[in-house]
Image (cartoon, rainbow, N blue to C red; front, side, top):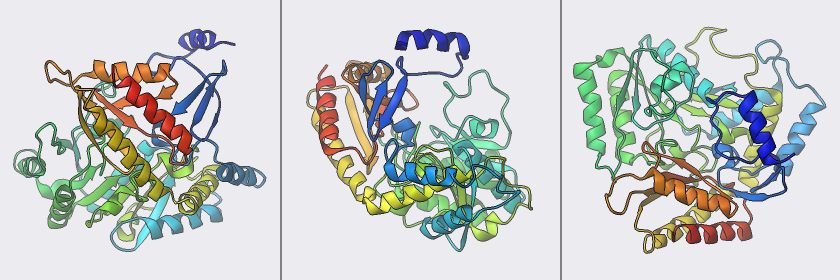
Amino acid sequence: MSNNEFHQRRLSATPRGVGVMCNFFARSAENATLTDVEGNDYIDFAAGIAVLNTGHRHPEMVAAVEEQLHHFTHTAYQIVPYESYVTLAEKLNELAPVRGPTKTAFFTTGAEAVENAVKIARAHTGRPGVIAFSGGFHGRTYMTMALTGKVAPYKIGFGPFPGSVYHVPYPSALHGITTQDAVAAIERLFKADIEATQVAAIIFEPVQGEGGFNVAPPELVAAIRRICDEHGIVMIADEVQSGFARTGKLFAMDHYADKPDLMTMAKSLAGGMPLSGVVGNAQIMDAPAPGGLGGTYAGNPLAVAAAHAVLKIIDSEGLCARAQQLGERLAAMLEESKAWCPGLVAVRGVGSMIAAEFNDPDSGQPSAALAQAIQKKALEQGLLLLTCGQYGNVIRFLYPLTIPEAQFNQALTILQQVTRG
């Protein structure tokens, strides 16, 4: 059956609210290559939205899931526990850059992890308020929509949202927003909207995902840590998109001297299997009463087996170092592209979490049209890219860190061609 036939069936069978970017349908995938139902190959620089840092169907991950299939697929950890959940928690407790002794709880999706981090912070502090940042993305459930600092397409038509959520600007050199501006906005909240003693948590992405790969300056992270310590607020780092070697370190927070109280994780944790988690200070994590955390599929044993394999792969294949190497090459090529692509106004990121921002060369205004035109041309040449940013004018690059050298070079060649217009 052709891509077009499947497309027509999709339109009839599924709602328009589930937005779909590509007009082709996947048949198979291997490492950084996607093959559609008509046999066309694509270089995958989307990786399921940062889910496949270890590539499609890494053999070690597949073997781990197959092995688990021979034992059991589900018990509900809260009913009958299993060792692999505990050992994965122990590994992450050791690896996560969190202050003090740590504990970990597993869930299914990134939004679930964020929801539960807020629950834990509120249980620990007895307070309602949560401060988040403009441009941030934390999920599509009601609490996480409230936390998300981007209206279109995530919030349109869905209000009202949960209360006691407040937003402040996220630093952006290109848009003239400084760390001082962000910190001053938090201080203004304490004077105008909510007293500091009623704030349970401040949540931020060390590298914004949907926001356009804006990297938190060290001064911002230090200021958040200082404010949280001063007022007894829980500091939450949302690492759902930035975790598991993407930034050149296992977690983006490994780049900073100041550490959070809680961290959320998901996406590349389990190499394509649905698994998320919250790791945090043990005292804070223990605040909810028994039964207050969990979920029917939370910590599914197949996904947990995949996550054990992912951590081994990242270590054995040196993916943190490779993320840094590949990211440097991509960033250098994009910087060179500014010579022939005047609309390319910024290249930023850390490790292999790199983005390019585009403005209209004539008006200087953010240009989603230019970013989309480059994205379309790349797809025509077999390179799958994603856009992001508050104005939709940013292209983000999320290739598997296991991508073969020849294929990565081919992708860079395509990027050079499509940015020439």
